[in-house]
Image (tube, rainbow, N blue to C red; front, side, top):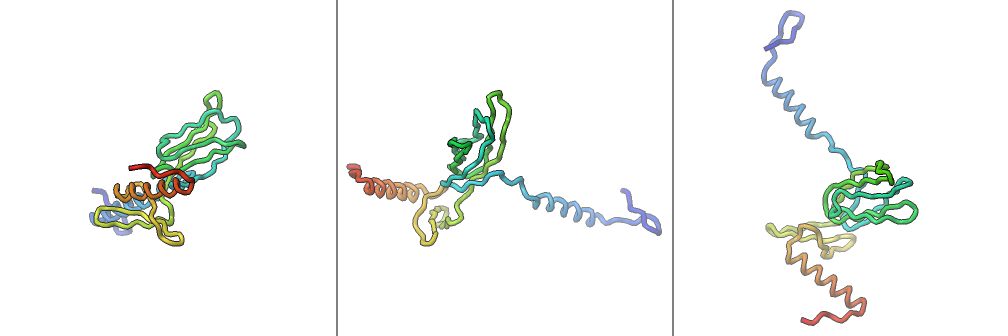
Length: 164
């Protein structure tokens, strides 16, 4: 084992000091921020992305996480479909990469999650709380809330209720 040299010769270093220093370095590495996404989209919301000129092809890494819809004026509408991170690549006609971005889809800030044991329900509380479907909710709650939304929308559009 090597020892640092002080003014009076070699100075022993305690193993615990070395282990403590290594542990602190490990914690610092874990605490370092992960690479932030270039574009953040909220689940069930849209975000606009300005595309460079001459884009011929748009590639989405995982279209289950984010949807993309090109618009006039070089805009791309990104729609958050599921939680997670994916990427988008824009290519010109020759296949050259014009744009590459990381997209992260996260939960809405107004979502309140209620756990009943392992069963989960989500509510939107902006400004008053009401049921909101969210990926990961209890199946019965999810399907019941969807059924209410569909029935309400059908009635608002004058569609006759489905016969049972």
